Amino acid sequence: MSLPRVQTRVPSELESHASTEGEASGAPALHVVTFGCQMNKYDSLLVEGRFLQRGYRLTERLEDADVVLFNTCSVRDHAEERVYSWVGALAEAKRRRPELVVGVMGCMAQRVEGEVFRRASHVDLVCGTRQLTTLPELVDEVRERRRRSGGAGSQGLIETSLEGAMEVDRRSEPYRDGLVGHLAVMRGCDLNCTYCVVPATRGRVQSRPIDDLVAEARWMIEGGARVLTLLGQTVNSYGEDLPVGEGTGRRGRPGLSDLLRALQELEGLERIRLITLHPSYVTRALAEAIRDCEKVDRFLPLPVQSGSDRILRAMKRGYTTDLYRERIALLREEVPDIELGSDWIVGFPSETDEDFERSAAFLDEIGFVQNYVFQYSPRPDTRAFALPDDVPIAAKKERNRILLEAAERSSLARMETRLGGDVSAFVEATAPKSPGSLRARTVHNLPVRFEGDEKLIGTTVRVRIEAASPYGLSGALAEQG
Ligand code: SAH
Ligand code: SF4
Ligand code: F3S
Image (cartoon, rainbow, N blue to C red; front, side, top):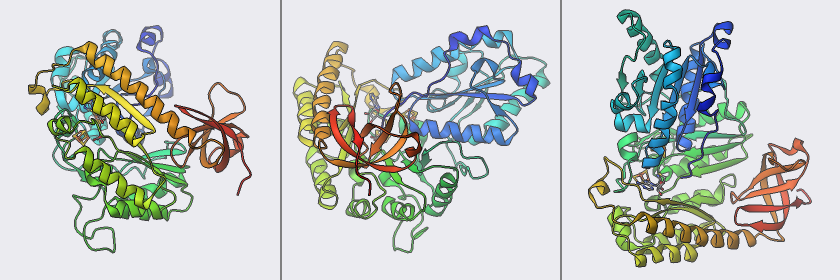
């Protein structure tokens, strides 16, 4: 899963502005800083929506906010350290404006709980991944405790229970996610990859019933969404926890294939994207649904993590490279032109040069068009934490560099197969830094640029491909139709 950063103002600007705007407009102002994956981006929208319903307004300017919330990631040590440096930058603002409420929520909050207060004593509130929708009440509680105690300092409020389901329906709010909307179809993860902190931070799988998701998708489309990005840690295990028969006329539990078929029918919807799939749950039914539903992208992020069977076993990924090959063969039987993406971890404990070379060879063999490479980071609360982190940093860096080179070669080779052809692409925006150009994504999820009128944004066009790089395509508008 890719880890985009949600851009926001740098904390060094905190000191230079007074907080007048919020007071002037009367409504308290919220600013959310988001780290981590697309699921966190969705969760931040969810949280902002709950505050809007309570009469808050959103502010772009962190220094104007009455409530600042950090939505955090725990997947690697570096992700947590970034959070602490951002949170730390608020200490001075809090000293000057003691009425400010500072909260830390999401995966890191879930993992470290009260440790946040020890490292950042100006934080008022810690909220885990399953209590997010109660945040407006938790902020009220902080204020109430302050009032009662007569003090303005941190009240040390913690809410991190992973029990029960969270109410996530957003339909009573205005839709705010643009043309390409995110929809978390499930939360949590039932697998236990030995390196991964996510099962500890997100808890067990909870899928939302198909009817609920279709209703939310309709609301998104009415609000302007044309692309739905369906999110789940293992999005193709969707439904495994739902009651038999719910939401479908078929026997058995509903699965991702049923959900895709239901969403395919929605008028106004142009494309459906999936993030992230797990090889163990690639089934014939899924391959057939992708084949039949032309709105579903011909691209699947299907992380391998390692090309060494010994390392895959140590990671407890639940498959071998051969099984991975079989699953891809099955997909390609139904959807011959499917493109694939992968995440890779280099430097997992005991990984030898030979193991690593197997990863590089497997990347070449499968021909992934998109690759994210990560250096192994030992995480507390995971099984691999007990293993010695014995691959030296220099070797991790070198393997990272080599794998990125292999990834570039592989991406370029895949991109070049489109040269000279026409592709169907959904136009998302103007291209940054090139006036007159538009940015689109093909049905294989490849980025493509071409010159065109802004009126084309939000529509699907055909583009003749003239140039390819490892990062995308460019071309010219082709004969439409
Ligand atoms: N659910 C997704 C992954 C979510 S985490 C899946 O199963 O594929 C996103 C990526 O971060 C993972 O695919 C993995 O490559 C990487 N990652 C997870 N834990 C890590 C760790 N401890 N060190 C380095 N990379 C890690
Ligand atoms: Fe983590 Fe594995 Fe679950 Fe992905 S499938 S979230 S890597 S435990
Ligand atoms: Fe996402 Fe990071 Fe949590 S990758 S699920 S925000 S640990």
